[in-house]
Image 1 (tube, one colour):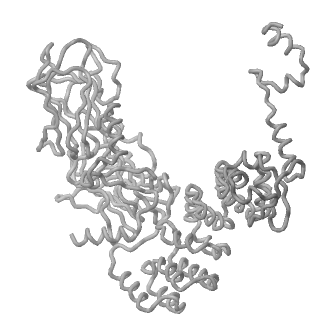
Image 2 (cartoon, one colour; image 1 turned 135 degrees about the vertical axis):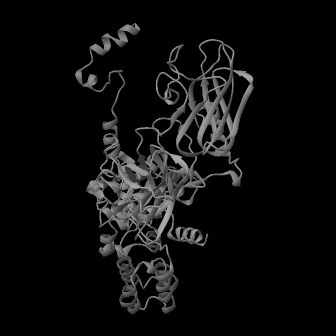
Image 3 (tube, rainbow, N blue to C red; image 1 turned 180 degrees about the vertical axis):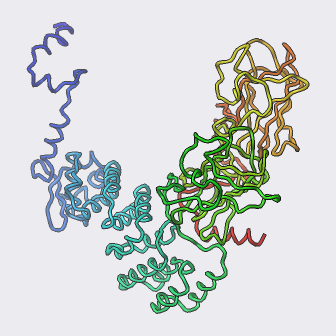
Length: 619
């Protein structure tokens, strides 16, 4: 019989049932039937060669199936351990969870919605113990969807016990946002010591401190039989007594007898004398909290309604911004935004009015009470324009004050929009200034070409590197009299740049590049006056703060004009980026050269913020 007959007439003569078992590629697919038949063997005496005894119940099983599905059972039943010689194996595990696990092993299925929550958590523990990673992940994903006030404490304990960081993070976020209700719920008293200490350490565990103390006190009484004295001290020590009023300290804490009188006096003294207390705040990652949705508003400034309305398009000389007058010495009450409550934030985006080429100097301060302010951004020495991307260590914030100190056009500070949020992104900073990895010499980042001739405005910064010819697609200047000058949107810590010289024929160019923060003091970062160069050019140099880049052509083998098609900083040259990543992986940077990092996986502790604030005050 020919192969054509085998693939054609034979299949054509098969019945419809056979055809239904085949896919379009004529592969037999009977997975569902196989799983159903295998499931019939689960806890069946048929062909059983091992019996597990759990809570005095005998559960027959099949060694080869268990070993094929689990490395743990493979080692237990075939790895030379004593159990490999036993027909009956006693296990000290939860019965319902083990039966659910057996059904999963045989069928690949588990109906979590039909199980009680305590059995699900027990099964999660067995999946972790026996190495069923896919099952462990699936159960974790399910638990994330069914979190509630009644189960989050138990799920958090399980997640921490089994090292499920992703599930722990979701539980923490749920508890943070429902802290007041969690403290009143009966399941709070079942929370483990470690989980409770972890919650109390979080700046984002946001509730009134007197309610936190009362719940901790009740938790200690409910668990007094299992707690040591040091355990109680560990938990009570995480309560931030300085956040409570003197009246609460005297009428609630003192009568409880749980706090030493000297520590009570210390808390009162800290509350009176410390300028930056260890505040807690609400945490809403990646969400702008400076909006009406979060009851935030502008309380100081002219034309206040525009700042938080979300409109970043419809603004001009007459409308669409909030402003304040700049005093003779740069002094002003500024523009003040009140957030709906105390939030933890580490990122502010601000749009400065940019319908012309004006630039501003400014600083930003934050506060919880409008009495003690912390300066988180200081751009009083650097001109800035358009969108500002600003990062700082996480702070508990209720008020944000924007103070303009200089405007290159007049004595008014104009802000079109403000966003405030907590971001999970890891952002490299050096001395408070962003050290970007992506190109910031773009219009979207506020950069513009301050000097240079082109048919299209800012064509040098549009990231288009193909569509240029004799007449368009480049920026130029007359050699000997002009320059190409680029201003970045804000100060950046830069150590590389790249440019594309016009290369539609064989001409070569010579040039040099300088950088500055104030257009008064320039530093040479590339000197190619003696070299004829063509096309793409990459330069690395000692990292420095840069606002302005000046490109000065000195020679062209074809004429008296210097032509540049594209400019970027930092350099996005693929080979350079690859090398930099390798350096980062190998840790080749010296400690003195390594940039600071805002790492917001866990908001910075209040103690760290206090120390920094005290240092600033002493300076």
